[in-house]
Length: 252
Image (cartoon, rainbow, N blue to C red; front, side):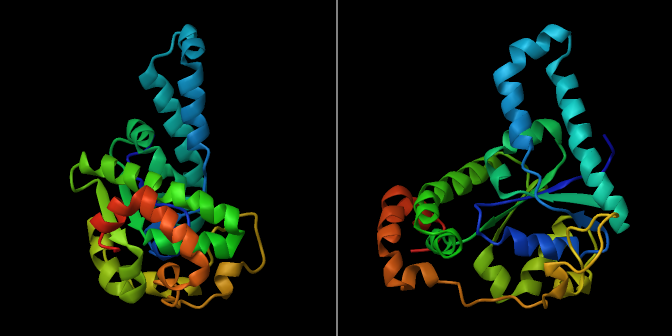
């Protein structure tokens, strides 16, 4: 494993992780490729099969070293193709696997983006329908709660929390302290994220959807989940399952 300090961007799906990823990927020093997702599979394989694995005479530390090397190798391919010197991973569901990530990458910096759970649920409905919205009612407190619980046990240099609402309202004001926390110099290119190609590999050619977008940040969806009448059943369900968390975060 290299001496690079990796960055993990996590959060409940539909919380702005993609927007943040494109911004971070636009920094001249940091690459942030497509979602990986398979760290969850590695964690599950280890958890369910450790009695078999240990019979080969390997220690948990050796296994973790190999898993980390394998995972980092993939990111290094994208990083070098972009001419960057540091890699980041954006996979929202890793909010549920931060303990495992901590074992593989004990120096990693974790950026947790949080969005109003009502807007997350509404966004799921708009994107994937009512079944997805109902699932998000349970997923939002699980992702947010687990990531925050992990972060509370970490030093300030390892866990950073930001709000989606603040990011879209004042992007530069939110990004400047984040970039500084990452130990990187400020660069205006993070604000021009729409001008760059993202999720590109050395063997790919042609335009990408990201490259055609402008560097606009849309604020119209903020508060949508608390305004629309059609989302009322999900709002009530979220209040039952996560009302305390919504209030703790200042969303109600």
